[in-house]
View 1 (cartoon, rainbow, N blue to C red):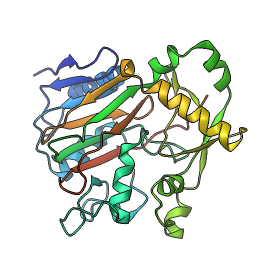
View 2: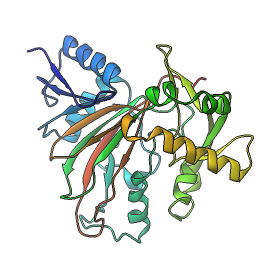
View 3: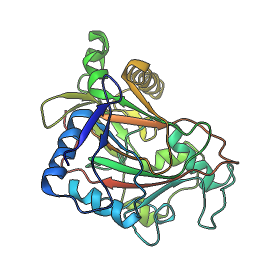
Length: 287
């Protein structure tokens, strides 16, 4: 059965039907999903109660998978699974003022996954296992359109500029203790251009507030002001698709030209459990 697509937003996102993520996929189906992913940036597959192993197998059709830098946030049984959750290993909700609780609220800041790597991820697959009744939506913004429609004056100001991205900086945002030295050594700070040229020639704004420590060549105050200005521009409603989660929704998105954020929810009272696989990138960010 051929896959079917339904647009979810004028600029970003499509719902996919006709694909069972739990089973083996033939090459024609994989190619159809890959083409839709490239075109729409975000794909939604509803009612897909897959196992972690099935999620990993599906994700590997699109590239090798990253392993998250910190072991505490990975699945112990399936290391390719990053646990995006406010629930601890003891199966209890983490206190919001605990290190684990504070870390889990970083998803409430706009970002693109693994921008702290020299070669950031290509994309991600996220499976909703437990969802909250209010809040917890995931919003995605189209950075190609954000750059294309950017005022000429702002384009001129950011031309040629680079930003420093740091995993450790993300931890500082929540006043978390320093990383284990061995883990920190695997993710040193990296510099990326603010404007990214994609393989198909399109230009995309490349911003990631969770990890973007500063813009090089500017004072700290100037850097923070410009980062805030770029994030405000990039996340206007016109560029943004909002997804309201239901159990066993699976979302797949392109990290190269989409950024995302989770809306706050009652972290201390409701369980939110998501399992993510991250598809490794194959080229550095180029301007």
